[in-house]
Image (cartoon, rainbow, N blue to C red):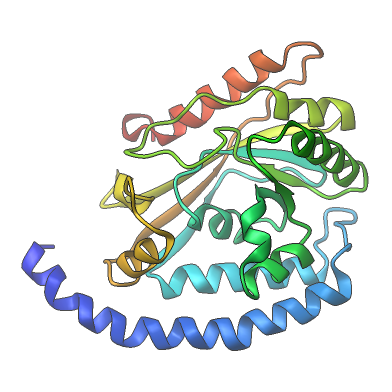
Length: 261
């Protein structure tokens, strides 16, 4: 689509997407929060999702579609409990993965203080981590193991933060110890935004871009596919966390490559 055409359509996209987002936040989010507060500890049994998990997936999928993103699931997520490890370029990554599987995320501690969103994250079982704090990391690891042993799946971004320009950073190996301690499977997940069959790197944060700035840019942008690739599980190898991290990163990197898809 020509640039002039995109510029012409941007105000029109704002005109209908902004009211839809506000309505979804006020109505849909509150409905989900009420349900989560009532059954936040529900777990999958015999491969069947509890109602709270289905509501999380519905809310997330709807939000993506309002932004003009069409969720596409490739592969199959393993049954709970699983440690999902994914690449990280945008705040949308959490919403995108939640559109396919309700999980407990490990997220930065600042999110806990965000109005409404922070409370919802807490109700959904988010594990908050204060970056650069070793005591916080030890507590996070312990909580991850407890959640996994209780039957909940946990999702982490082992890069330790969002990347820019499509670069897949080195995975931190220590986070994989939680899967070994809880004796659960590690499944890599590649999150990929696509337009006309090609990966859209610009869907994530631009360097120096604020959270609000990213939201406004995406709200006015053209539609695209949002792919979730559930990849082959990584073999659990005691005392070889680094190899597990490297293999997970290798599989995700391969799935992100336009020439490999």
